Every structure is written in C-alpha cells, then in structure tokens.
Image (cartoon, rainbow, N blue to C red; front, side, top):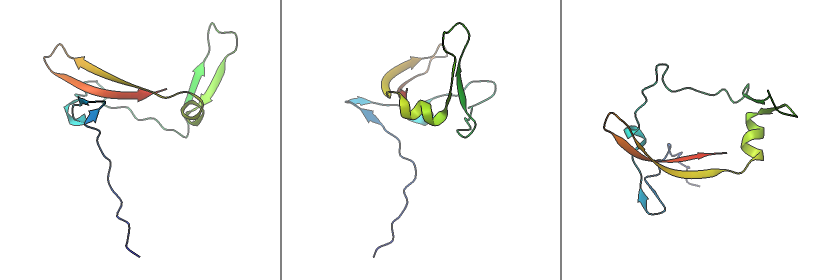
Length: 89
C-alpha cells in the first residue's frame, strides 16, 4: 500500500468566479498583531440587558449555528485593497 502524503494548508484563490487576493496581501496593522483563540477555554458570553444570559463554548458556537460566507473587498485609506472571503457563524 502506498504511503499517504499529508498536504499543507491550501489557499482559496477564486470563489464563485471572483478572483481572491492572497492571504499574504491582507495587511495586519493592529498593535498586538494577529490574535489567537484558545478553543479549549473560549467562552462566548451573552449577558447584560438580555432576558436569558447564556455562555457558549467554542464548539457550541461552531456546531450550533449556521455558517456564512461573504466575499468582501476591503479598501484601505493607505491605498491598498484586497478581495477576501470571510467565513463565520
């Protein structure tokens, strides 16, 4: 039996006929840099002026809600722009 070669991450460069910018074209200009989420300890808290406050784990958020994709062009005041596919819940 042939050995299976594991592939690295892939980048989607076209979505529904629209060419997408490379992830490398997206500039990260925040002071703290890209933020990471610890999915083991993540809690989404819905509280404040709500009737039923709730806490959700990362898995509950990902598994319980509909996923959406949106193609967005970001035009920065610095003169650069990117066409990026965002995905979330």
